[in-house]
Image 1 (cartoon, rainbow, N blue to C red):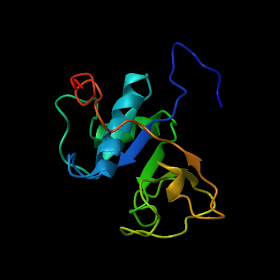
Image 2 (image 1 turned 45 degrees about the vertical axis):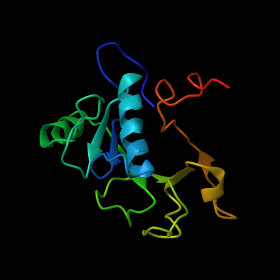
Image 3 (image 1 turned 30 degrees about the horizontal axis):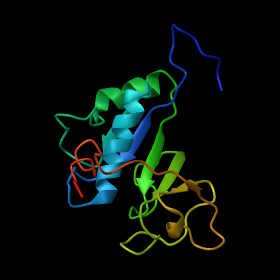
Length: 152
């Protein structure tokens, strides 16, 4: 990896493959939250596969000029696919597969390419013999949903 420089970004952008945000799917929510969190900590992350940007989250949609800028500057995007996406539809060399459910349960493949880096949202989504690290993020806003208002 190239040495950090104030005058040039050496960090690769993230392309996160997701449908439009909905409160009805925890998987879709965490994909959008991951994009938001990456942008909040200073990474460059975009959503791919959806058509609506959030009004409250930093979840920009990937656009042609972004892709062209990444190509022109030699950046190598990292694509993050949920387990329901089959293959590598964006044909990007650096693939992260995020198991937001058991592989193959809601669609997609049960096994993945050896070149893919695999993470799971929860340990129960990791099949025996599958190497996967755990990457969990909050999906419930505890500033709204908490036990502080309950009086016993």
